[in-house]
Image (tube, rainbow, N blue to C red; front, side, top):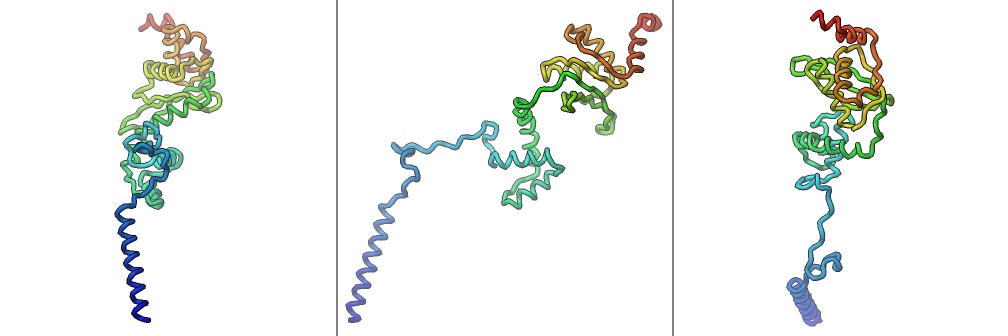
Length: 228
């Protein structure tokens, strides 16, 4: 009885070994989607935005880091720690390159669907320290508080203000209906100069500080020119 049982176990084991051998030699894994691989064709690559080509990380990771950086007061190393909690090892210099590369591109795409600026602008300039020196940040907002444009200049002269107004118009390709200025005389002189260069500026209503307007009128009067 024991000899017969041992013989049956030996035969079964031999058959199983033969079955495993046949499977290992002749079996090939079947593709998941056989329809897309007929004729030996490879599956198509996943469609990806061209701006993310040759990037190691997924586009969702890049967009998340850039969005968190510009939305919240987070440093690059804070984002590195937050990504590490999700199992992603990212360098802070990599996130820096993402911000420099993709923020301008995102801004262009967002502006396609953004509401256009209002025709009434408020313009002023603010002194800001840059590398130990004083610079002036020209900025314009519309009646709703939306930023029209901004420009960092080394001074607050007529030429600097004129460069800012030209840049704002070139960005939106529209002339404002009304501009409210502060007490900087250079901005008033720049608009007077632009009115002489381009007739489209003549229809813009200018309002602002009465003292600055009076200084501009005095500086551009024939009597003031003759005294110079």
